Amino acid sequence: MAELRAADEAASAQDDARRVSRILYLVPVLIFAGLAALFMARLHSGDPSRLPSALIGRPVPAFELPPVEGLRTEAGEPVPGLSAASLKGGKVTILNVWASWCAPCRIEHPVLMELAKDASIRLVGFNYKDKPENARRFLGNFGNPFAAVGADETGRTAIDFGVYGVPETFVIGRDGTIRHKHVGPLTPDALPGFMAEVRKAGGR
Image 1 (cartoon, rainbow, N blue to C red):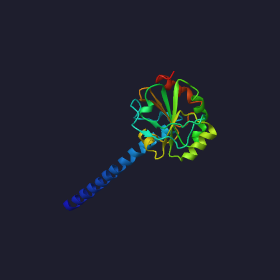
Image 2: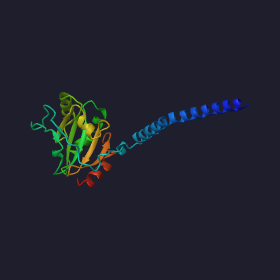
Image 3: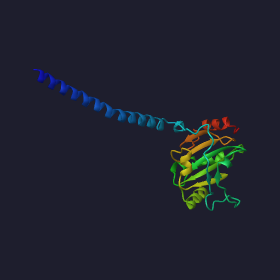
Image 4: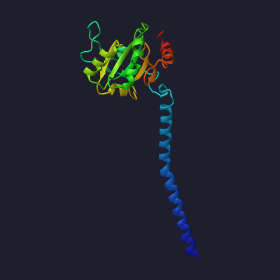
């Protein structure tokens, strides 16, 4: 009798151990699924600009990007590259991360061309993982709204800025601090809210 009771207790202990093991196995899976669901909900919430950025309120990362090879203004002057130092002082800067191969970049480009007419701001760009000839062709076809364009051929600088994917647009204060980040194309519908952020940063 004692032997049967001991066998039952041993079997019960083994069952309990299996249940605990299954629960411990499921915990990280459930945590990952929850985080993934949260990210996807924000991504598809209809307002991608709400994706978080740890850099808001911080100085721009240190960087120095060369100009896009052969890119010139309508007057024939070379379009300069970009550095962290060039984003400080003067006007509030709008920094757009774009590429010739990026379809949404074409959608937002007319909005950028309009923004370039605003004398109270400075519009610059990162050309992300692109070939210089393709970047030049893109701006030649659609117009160049940028006062300066840095060639981020490896994408390293964009990673330092926490870029999820192109296009993305940053508002940078006169002190070189990142004030706002917009993920996805700037559309006419998104522009009023975006410009409100520019005004907060002292644009106008």
